[in-house]
Length: 363
Image (cartoon, rainbow, N blue to C red):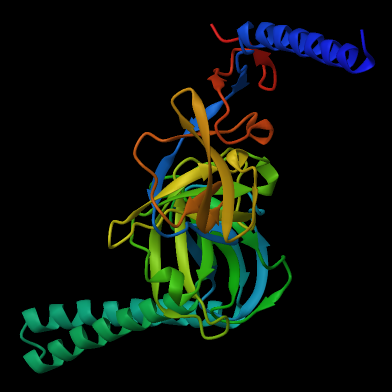
């Protein structure tokens, strides 16, 4: 056999082996695509505008600044900050020697005018005094009584609680000299809800979207991650001359024991939209990557996922509001999203099943 023929036969044999091998490979079934275990969340809808966020100080809803109507030396202060008080309870007393003397003189004058009036009545009954003289005696008594009331008003020697409440601040100590009208104590009076409110300052852009009664969530550093509920109860009609912001009061509905004025808190106010527009919201855990302008996510499409890049309207806490609305009942992949590619088969599990990232053979 010639060398050329030998080479030809060898080539044919190799082709036959190759063909047989190829036939066996094509006849074997293709490996099935394995499904990735993931978790998903429904796309939520929410307001078209972001929630309003602000910080401020906790105060009593009804604060009363108590003072003496006259200047003098403080004799005693009966309560300290934090003490509970009852309506009419004695809180502080004042020493006013000059006013005490004036009050005594006013009482003496009234007593004298009363005796004069009684004598005039007897003489008039005996026809020993004219009607005009009797009337003058009555008038003098009335004037003396008014003078006594004025003297009593000027010599307010005591401060009493105007109602049930809590002492928020004690500003003077016994022995201090105070002016007329100078604040001695600040009382927080309880009335409705918790009696406490967070006062915040808002810009004109934020305040125009607020309405009385808008719900709010509040947090305080002293209470960690605990959230409190409240509502907008007051909105200032004009800006603060110094701060340039609008004062807004958020009344707490469920204050915790031990809460007191002066605590720093933050509020998230869900302002109601006048146009009633809505946006789609995604949890931050669904984002594969992105920035303030756009994010990449995987949406569930039957047993597979579809990769989408979506424009961002704004970020609201732990959620992202989208510039365009997604179809109702859309679901977005949360846990396991970083390991997916467009078109991958997935198996959605709930929180009680094994964690995402493992592969499962299709049923």
